[in-house]
Image (tube, rainbow, N blue to C red; front, side):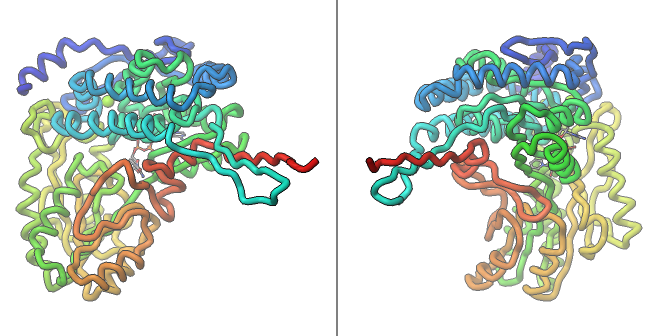
Length: 496
Ligand code: NAP
Ligand code: MG
């Protein structure tokens, strides 16, 4: 499709902003709505249901009712598999519509929405669907006159609260394993990106997920998110978002029913380029592409580039050249590589880091400017700060925009020290051809992901998540299924 095709399609799109409770699209009880504004050009996309605690009660009640009735939780794993795989097929069949909604709603380039977000989301439902009828429980090696069964049971009612940077995919990473395990689910998308979550809920119904098993509640974090966090009848709450809000969910759980909490939080990922890597230019190129991908709105964004002084100048030169591949443009143009940031408030916050960096003594090498202001949209040029010291605010705080800090160091051990000097521990990378250095650094870094001579490798088969204040627990892979399950031990006496 061409740019014109996408624009025409966008103009004729009918968007339903009502929530999804008990299998029905519903307005909020208060009948209030909030505006879903596109960051592409500031246009109103639709009004979305502004739900509150009472709507949450209805969604949770419907999830509880279906869970207890066993309409999903009681189905054979192979039957749940068939439904989840049908959902994956439906997501593929609705690729263009879903990609368009994602791009209009949060501003990422349409070619990324189609080739990455929609593809990875359908793959995620396929993968957990395929997995669930191949997992066995355990019989423990107890004495001969006893039998001890260790079985996994669904938690019950599971809530998922997700951010806006990969709206559909972050939802899928939680909803797919939760449903596969047999739970009933209530999903709350971010205020800035409700639209694909609502369509996902409808497609799930079409695929055969029984009404009430997968509910979507829309609204604001401090209302709907908080009501989910404090709810007495939710068994587990799984969150992706900022570290600050992640901490609230720990508090909500403590103040209510000690629901199980899973947290995928922020990052300030260190990316170490050493002189012992043979191809400095390749390392720098990959680093820039990973830093500016998705407008830098990535929890794994390699935002701290720690570079050995011997290769510093070459790295900065290549970074600057590669950044030129990322020109903020019309997100509906398939040729665009960099889209809009999610909204004006976030854009102001991101741009504020230009002054912060200057005040702290960093050198602005590239960008730092707002772009395409005439469109009414939210665009920021790829930005590079050089000669950053790790204690500066641009190196300590998550920016979540297209801004990269270059931190020169003098040795491998200094690089590790700087890498670990952060409250976060999500992703990290090291570039070296020296095998023992690669192991030394990857063991030394406190992070959930370490890339050696690459960045942002991705597959459903591997766990994803962070150390330290980047979170608790892991998404993806078979390990994630454990989050949505309770372990039950059943003793059976065999002796007479
Ligand atoms: P956020 O502000 O923490 O919001 C995330 C979700 O929490 C949204 O649905 C939000 O709802 C809700 N929320 C906000 N305030 C709340 C409150 N007081 N109580 C309950 N819920 C509340 O994060 P974001 O700005 O959407 O996303 C960016 C963050 O996500 C970054 O820190 C990024 O690193 C992180 N992230 C992490 C991963 C990972 O896997 N580790 C992946 C992607 C993103 P509203 O939108 O309605 O306010
Ligand atoms: Mg929006």
